[in-house]
Image 1 (cartoon, helix red, strand yellow):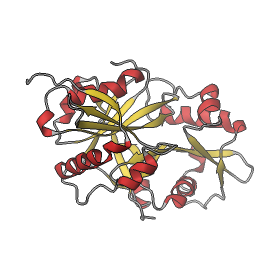
Image 2 (cartoon, rainbow over the protein chains, first blue to last red):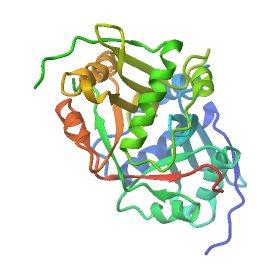
Image 3 (spheres, each protein chain N blue to C red):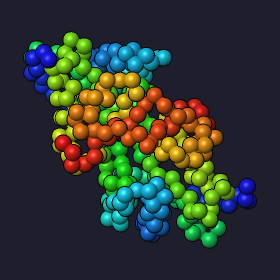
Length: 154
Length: 154
């Protein structure tokens, strides 16, 4: 393992928008996505940096304050738990900063203050991120399968 | 198919709490859940009927205004779509009212005004509800698997 990068995790700011969108593009390309993510500067402004955020984003900065990773999440709700939980949307670390604890620093920043909440994340089946989440106490919920209706389908 | 029941779908009220909790118990038992759902009158009051609802619940009433089914949902967010979507939590129809269009009436009440939003739902793998959702335009997302950290696991 390479030395652990000293990163600072903090709430994303408007000026991080470009770096976040660039990383999101990389994430989409890595997943083999058929089109680019539709999150853009104007939706970031409305849904992340606006008065009523629908998505929370944290960034990891290296010692030069360069953004080297990000995590996005929102609240969900479980009637089973009778409580709100956390759904992790995206987690990405720039390739040059992998295996240095940046991803777990980001995840722990979200999960740490939410010890009493359920935390969910979708992982693609062929993704080694499965092992990352397992090391951090996540378990696969193989009994559930996700059904989705895409926009515009009635 | 039995005749279609004429049902009225509307936003749940405080006085529906007991009927909702009773149906949720039936749903949990049907799924073979190891403990009862933790949603209770006080969490309903806080999270559904309070000033800042975290979970939305609609009920279906028969012609005598008896509650014969319910659906719960909350907003989620997709950076892929750059937009908020809908996550369906629970959907239950009392056994005597099955196969009469009650479930699809509840789902359409949620999905109808949200044609431009992605709608997600988890289904247990062995559940015939899969076919119900498929008929209504949902597709299984077999590439994703859910990972979960339960409360209290650090």
